[in-house]
Image (cartoon, rainbow, N blue to C red; front, top):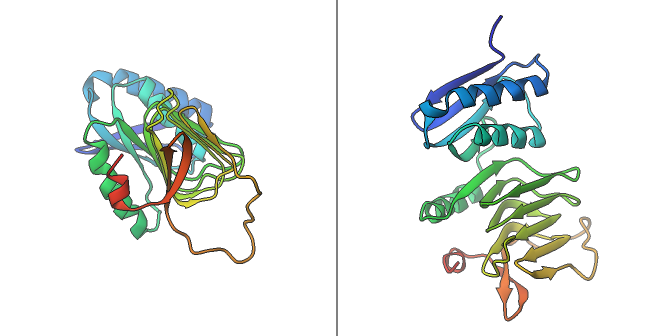
Length: 223
């Protein structure tokens, strides 16, 4: 019987090949088992992870990454997609934030959009390569950067850190919380009709309230 989960290791990453015909729950158990068996082999390396062989949804990606983390000592810094179109905004922001996160802030990447009331929660700073749709939420004990639109909810500084921030290429949130400070738009924002030019924004706490500023590399470097 062929293996339903195959792990291929490269110098800077891991390719996880999943059988397209096996039920997802069975695959998840096999992923946990194989990474547990290979824990000493991989050690504490920082790796990028790609998922191949079958289409997986956003929540399934999260469960796979969680299974790998719980059954190994790996630091997964990026979930790599093979069919994503290159976006210049992503490259610029990632280059800057990769340097920032490598300076000591434990961070992670998530490829994909959160929709249909999905919730992504982490103890680390996180960069989302996608959108956060209305009804969905991202929760981080540290900082949140969304390389897409924030239309749902975002909670940063979950451990009560008022110096955390939330940044997005398009900022139209349903609700934001940074540390113990909350923000909710007074009027419902329309997704239709004439829209202003999209400008990246950053939300942070200043003078006891959440403030929104246009996002620049110089401003981001202050955090």
